[in-house]
Image (cartoon, rainbow, N blue to C red; front, side, top):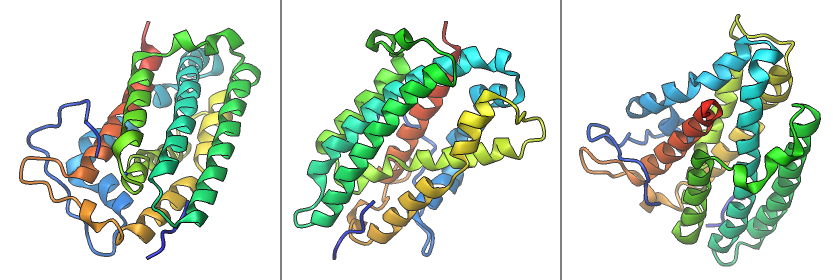
Length: 254
C-alpha cells in the first residue's frame, strides 16, 4: 500500500499514573482523537489558555511586544531545529516511496526558507535586534524541544514522526479562539503577525489528512497501553504538547 505524502521517543516528562490511553474511535482521525480525548484535556487546557498568547491578545503593543519578542526568538530557534528534524526524518521514509521522498525534500527546503523569513520578520516586524538570534540565547525549553525532535528522528518510524507534529494542529485552534475572544485587540502587531496567519487551517488539515490516509499502514502503532499507562501515540502527543506549553512559558523567564 503506497503512502500518502505530505517513526516512540523517550518521554522526558513523567506521565500521570491516572492517565490512560484514549481509544481510537472508528471514523475519527487519530489527530482529532488525541486532541479531544478526555485523558488529554489537562494539557489541552494549559495549551489553549497559556499566559503568553492570552496576555498578548488582550494587550497593546507596548505591553505585549517584550514578551512576544522573547517568545519569537525561541520560536526562530525551534524552526531551525525543525528543519534539521525533517531532514533527518527523510531516512525513515519507506523504501520505494520516491514520491513521498521528493515531496518531503521539497518541504524541508520550504521550511528552511520560512525559518529565514521568521528571523527577518523578528527584526523588521517585531522591531527586535538581530543579535538576539545568536545561538547562545536558546532557552532551556527550546533546547529540550530540539533535543526531543533530534532524538526521535534517530529511531522513530515515519508515521510516529508525524504523530509528534499533531500539537501544531492546536495553533489553529488557539488562533481561532483568540480571534473570537471579544477582549482580543485586532490593531496590534501580535494580531497581524501571529493570530491572523495561524488561523489558517491548511497545515493542520494536511497533517490530519496524511495521518488518516496512512493509519492503516501503521496500525501496529495504535494505542494499546495497559491500564494506568500511556499508549505510544498518546505519549508522543503529550510530550510534544508539554514542550509547546513550556516554550510559551519561556517568554516570562527573567
